[in-house]
Image (cartoon, rainbow, N blue to C red):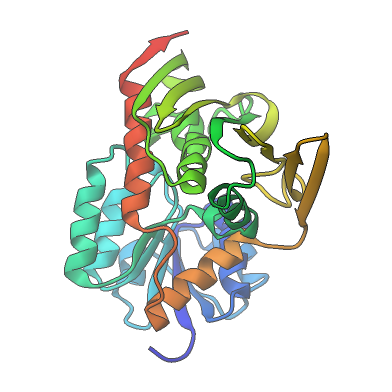
Length: 324
């Protein structure tokens, strides 16, 4: 394939308007070409930074256009599998928001369809494209903190006032664990290259959605603990604690939004080395990695198989949880 990858977006979601559509528009090797929405007024904010954007009145119309090479899917969670499969059947490469599925076994259908059609399909798990996480992965692998003993994570925000938000609705696959649990779980798996041996959890439910989840797990050689909540003051942090040092990320998931991406390496003698990443846009980097994979055959850093592993751990958290 020569020239930029032509992208279409299924639905005028706020997240797409604020982050992913601008990232596609700015990314090297990509062109934001189309938006599917039945409400033309919702296209105007997208056209403010991409004036030549073509607007389709249905998702099917966008998928039927042979000029569109790839689609980004920011639809409510319960629609992700359906439209990912439809897009692949239409010959489009697919980047779908997380969680891409509601159950780990649903990834099997997506993987089979990907292999059958030969397109690239992936969950939009943007943090693995951020250099701070690649840095952390190298530090752990190189023994910078000695033997890893424990990993701790936290991610919270409070959206109780936004009653119409899909995250607050059970019928759209809402709740905190699916929305942000993927980060405290997936980042630990990515940084360590390990999978959990056992998982224990406790969940506080409200109107049939999980609003606070506490997780404890055993990985080969180290323990793990984390919590996520959509009813607490905003906070995010990941800590990797070893026998010879500690790594702390201060804005591990929403770099530049929650704060500057910083990786602290704590060493013996109260020494601390800080590596800063003030300008990196993980959404733009994600799109560029996707385009390189489509165009040049470069291995994509976050394949469906990796995302299936995160969803499998989420399933285990749900299935074994005690109520709070």
